[in-house]
Amino acid sequence: MTKSPPVTDWATDYDIFDPEYVRDPVPVWNELRGQCPVAHTERHGGSWLPTRYEDLQAFVRMVPEMSSKEPTVVPPPAVSDTDEYGIESPPITSDPPEQIPIRRLILPYFTAKAVAPYREGTVELCHSLIDEFIDQGSADAAVQYAQQLPPRIIARMIGVDPERAGDFVEWVRGVLEIGLTNPESRMKYRRIIREFFAEMVADRRKNPGDDMISQLLEKELNGEPVTDRTAVGMCNLLLVAGIDTTWSSIGAALWHLASHPADRRRLASEPDLFPSAIEELLRFYAPVTMARICQKDLDVAGVSMKEGDRVLLNFPGANHDPEVFENADKVILDREKNRHIAFGVGIHRCAGSNLARMEMDVALRVWMERIPEFELSDPDAVTWAGGQVRGPRNIPVTF
Ligand code: HEM
Image (cartoon, rainbow, N blue to C red; front, side, top):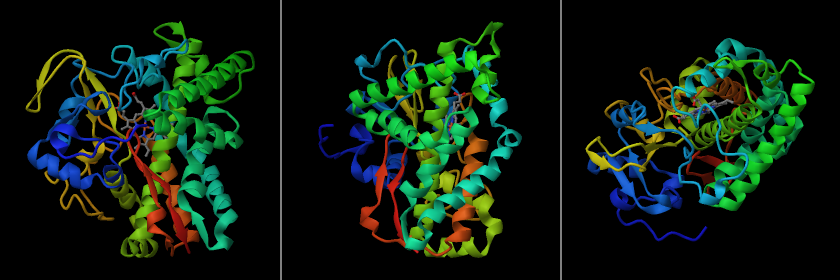
């Protein structure tokens, strides 16, 4: 990626890949919310950036005026992205009416009750990861812990080998992180993921098991059997949506606890706070920004948008709106009123939120039980990824 010129006016020329913004976007959102609540940029293919909670709610509800088809990625995909596999990952890349039955197909696998049986295995996994480094007195809490959890858990759910977790992380980063600004990486890893699932779907057709994919293949969509292409798209989504997101949230929570001793000690001594603390950390460090494309010229939230314009659904920014959250820029572990939208809102609201919450709850409880006292060993060595999914990628800690 060529280096972009520095931003001098965030309202008309924001840059979601600006290193300072990636590290801490909150000051920019606050400035924009006061001056220009829906900012615009020509960078990275051009887009609009709302920062007010109310406006986010309004944009998300503009169906069918705004579409999720194809480019839900934050910068638009290059033309060369088109290949025989397509880029559909339903339901996130579908609009109603097609989106509704596909979403209904996957929701039963992600209810609180459906994910509960994976809790015990998650607890064991967390302990076994910590066993590997606890005697060393130091670790990278992102690489050796947060990053290791979601790929193994989703692998178990969809019936693929959890030992391939390292591959899944590489593939998903290749698409969602490095691939955001590097079309070759995105194409390469998207193809690897699709080919992997195409093979798996073909195998499950012949040798069905009791895993989620085998079960999905036996279902119908609008009275027709689920096609291989739809099944591959759904698997792709589950892998891509379930890994970077949850890893980023767990990592951001650990980064916060490592760098805020008062909160860390409070959580260690008051474990009843875990449920509200998790919601608060999800609110504060919400990782996911999605996009929608205007289907016609629109006047909304005080700006005039043209057909084809891209709007970034800045859920993270909305979660810092002081109109909705008292002391919005403070982490308050026992915050009572917390209607955050880290999981989005409206028809595409995260289907995996129960799984994500379970993973975060187990990951943080086990860490705090085993390692209640820890701190950043080198704050300058912490790195953050931004764009579609924001979160820390390296968190060196000592304990
Ligand atoms: C902390 C972790 C997570 C966060 C913050 C998060 C956030 C989001 C957001 C903001 C959306 C809305 C997208 C939109 O409006 O276009 C979404 C959709 C979705 N998420 Fe998550 N997600 C997380 C974890 C997961 C997990 C673990 C899974 C499952 C493996 C998952 C599966 C999905 C699916 C299938 C959709 C699409 C729903 C639809 O289009 O109807 N997510 N997620």
